[in-house]
Length: 274
Length: 97
Image (cartoon, rainbow over the protein chains, first blue to last red):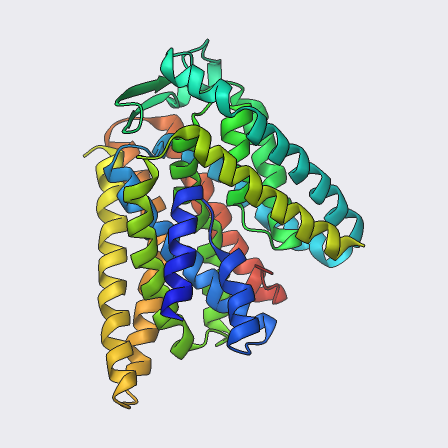
């Protein structure tokens, strides 16, 4: 279980996701957990991975705290609406739609690898800032270890990013996909945020929605104490290790593995839908 | 204090204290002491309330640096976090992943 946690924490830190995709199948397949129990342990560990990873990324100055909190307004609002809708709307079409969207995001992540590296090299992440980004002071910079320099970037299309984040929150709550997998592409592809800053900011954000879910599971006594301790310890170790590796990787490589992961999620969604 | 610093301190404190409590709980569990449950429960509580405390800490940090738009944003986040907790308790809606 400790190893499951370490693996999930490590992958989650590299890609800005929660790691439920690793933990839930491991617990149900290898440790004979029921799905509800597995989700309860997983959601607590998503909080662990988020706070452990985020504390390192904030220290390394890769996380954009203002952007994170700005978008959290939409994801938390979306999560509240999604929880209501989940009871009413049949979800099979939604799974298929989500699958198609993820395929699109996957292909575009993989195809924009070279473009991203070119933009990093030639400082092309600086663009015209919109009104909202200016008001909230969203544009930022981060030190890119692989490129060996400080990368300045301007946050654009803040309104579209906010709307997309709201929808991401709704979909996450309805389908049980962690938010990270959608938050990273929203920041990277809509809002002109370099992939590493998007990963670190997503890592920072996922703890907020997961924590309310985890509190509910905890209050209803559904969290298995014996499982949660080794998993959480593993996740914290894995996430801390992952955060020291991510910034040394080339942005194109991160986008490639992220794109492949999106494809895997798309496959899962479509299988559930049909 | 800058918001990044405040957030960093909150997250690090939450991570380290829950890691320590989890480790003590795990060791006690391995040697078969029933009190282990209390440590693991405390660790889990510290862990899951850390993001909420981080949002509250950010509100204060934005207030002290007079970033009113960001302060309002952090307030909204806190509001929706509390709302989803209340709705979850009232309707017993459990998140699915």
